[in-house]
Length: 429
Figure 1 (tube, rainbow, N blue to C red):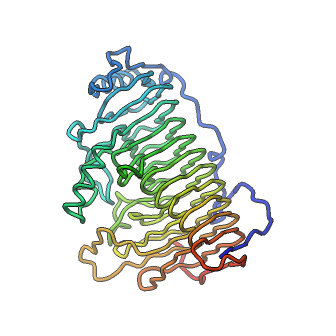
Figure 2: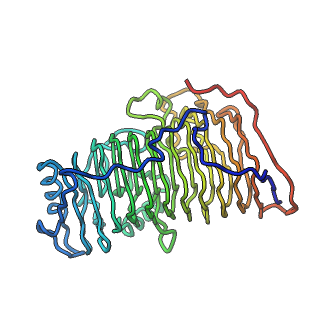
Figure 3: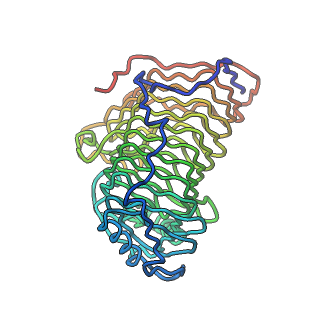
């Protein structure tokens, strides 16, 4: 079935968020250049690091980071070569720069990594630290033409072996390091680098504000060994995020909104909602969802995905509705997306590791004020929406002015399909 919905109206860059509030000038401004003492270069090979991909050099590189921090700040430079490391912790005033030809490679032995308090699976708890960590480091940046390689093959194999033994095992039981974890920080900038083969989530941002991710390549394979839970960008209770010019192909969700889960997740101060998220001018390959709300997300407001290509992702927009968590997804715009995916819009209950924790029934959730327009897609099915009124309500959902070829339908004749769900879902308070 062919759905012809193009109105001919020219698409223009949004100056307001879907709820009508004005977008800050920050979203169109250039990032501030690193200056002063923070611009000083601390090249790791000047302080004892050697070009040896088999020698674990965590202690040496961490000493360079600490030295820069203690001396008023600086940029830790990874020069051409391969450097094996485990958990690195950046401090206030420090930055990471990877020169062309540089590879910062993660150890594939989980015992090499530290254990730290992390917001994961919807709660703060001890877990394996990431390869690159920044806790409370305002202004932190990762830049350059080099590579951070998670060296994840061993972790992926171990995960699938564990799943064969125990199909119900969680991510917490299959210990693996994430690639980047930035927590409770402002003014974060990641540009130009390639992030590949993460053992677990690739980029995890928790309670961060004003984050730019620009011209970054993120890759994790689907074969010969699929990289499990290799989410490209996890926004975990973050606000004011601009993702642009990225090329991403992974084996799990691409941009995933998180923030907490459980019957009382919205009352836990360690959790939070996401707001003012702009994703544009990107190329997306494999991944279950280009833009996914859930599976541990209590809320998101003002999210835009626009002016991008999709080639092979399963779903463009996906709402995971947890019956054990109160969720509110609202004011979402998907605009001017081209390419191929299995589904255009997908909504269904999500019950992985379902736990009501003693609560006496499903928690009610909402999805509202969603607009998908001006897109040109080939899909097996344009929309796959499971209605579950005892668990969640959808309203003000508008899909219009698109050109969509549905390859899974027997009738490929052109026809118009504008559809809208009932109005009336309460706005969030």
